[in-house]
Amino acid sequence: MTTTESAADLLVRIDNDIDEKASDGDFASLDPLLAEDFIYAHSTGTVQDKQEWVDSLKPLVGKRRRVVSGARAEIHDDVAIVAGDVDIVWNDRPTKLNRYVRVYRLKNGAWQAISQRTVPAPDRG
Image 1 (cartoon, one colour):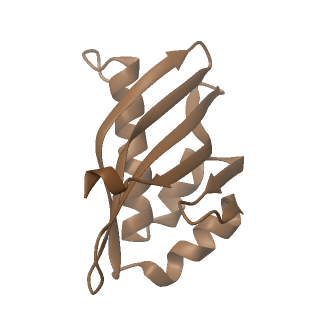
Image 2: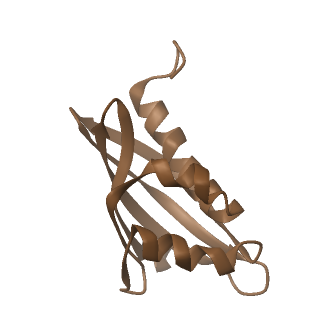
């Protein structure tokens, strides 16, 4: 965190990094941003643990991007919530418009995502 970066700004940056690294296939850099007990509830209803989610990303690298916008952070001591829009922009399919909430836990001085829930956002289309 820079001297001018607030804790909320840091969380939004980390949050954006998760989607960029997931899109780019930078799984080594993604790993420490996700807690070992991370759970992802997809807009489809599928629920995956950390390893299942990362494994599901691997065949998608280069086929689509996860694009976050409007993210905002809310901090409660050692727990934080980041919410915003996340669009799944496919190379060869229509873009999926979603909203998401990620929950973070501060552990050993670092924020790690512990949960994400994504839901369709048909009102955005």
